[in-house]
Image (cartoon, rainbow, N blue to C red):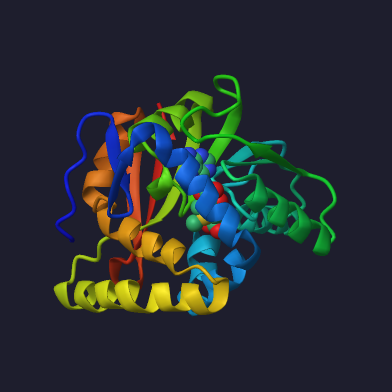
Length: 257
Ligand SMILES: C[S@@+](CC[C@H](N)C(=O)[O-])C[C@H]1O[C@@H](n2cnc3c(N)ncnc32)[C@H](O)[C@@H]1O
């Protein structure tokens, strides 16, 4: 990890940079607004398509019940919501799907993509911050969040919000990058992230800085055990974790208690 200064009270990391806490959400929103048009293509290129399997595993871990409401936080271009919808339709189940994201441009890209796939209803696209979800208490049956929580300013506040909007017994699923425990994999992964991601970002999305931020934010995210502890502290029980690709990605789950 680079020797960037430690955040003082009221400051936080934005990648490796230290910024005022109050500025981080705007910086994150501006970054995702810049890359929204190339976001889906970049995911496929960076992960050589592997992100599709990780996301599908999350979607399949959620037990679908007719009439349930699922909130996908930091849902971006709707990858998780569209997968959930496809799975529900295949099973003949009706769901209410809410996608909440900080960046209107990501939501617009998602809504356009849904229309391109012939999905004209059944998904509500909501602009909002994971730390202040624009929903009442106990409004949803499940909360999913994929590759989103790493970007929020206060992870504990976002977890507490997920718990607040969930009904008792509701399901929480969180997919996120994670530091791999194996040192050889960690070394390869760190080099790949630090060198290849910014290069791809520059070539494909025209934005080296955005993908340097991605590499830096991945490096700063807590390991799977520590993150599980944060989920428990937010009021979830039965917390479990599955890892993928040698521990590079972790899928945490829990129940609102
Ligand atoms: C890496 S993308 C993930 C998008 C989608 N979940 C996926 O897996 O493809 C991260 C998303 O998190 C959103 N985001 C970042 N901070 C957020 C916050 N505080 N509240 C809500 N969304 C946030 C960004 O706008 C962006 O769309």
